[in-house]
Length: 128
Image (cartoon, rainbow, N blue to C red; front, side, top):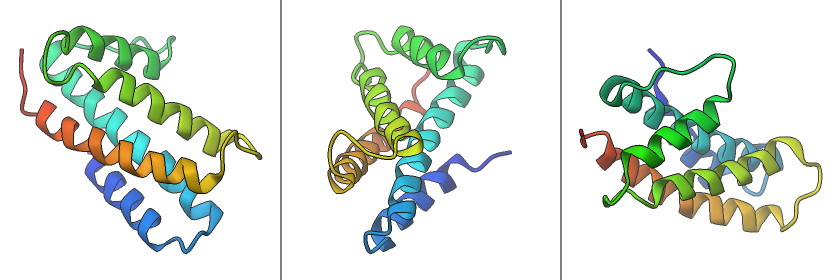
């Protein structure tokens, strides 16, 4: 079984020890997104009956299932947080030049992923 918490720990390590190394910081953004996405996905599969359609985007399906699961709860900001973190991840994974400085993206990603990961930890205990 995949250790998605380990992905988050790796992202934290990469952010804290990069010394500005671009590959490390870009990878940290990506690891933090996938940690949160897959923890949420697994919880939705195990507790909310999510069954992924292999012909559709996992990212879209998880975000939609999360939106449905957290309506009017303390977790209602999670879908937008996940979407924003995905935008940062896509920028870091696919774009040679970024709309803002890499340092700004990393800073925003680090803060956002920490907040989303904390909410995700609480969400993992939440059942419908």
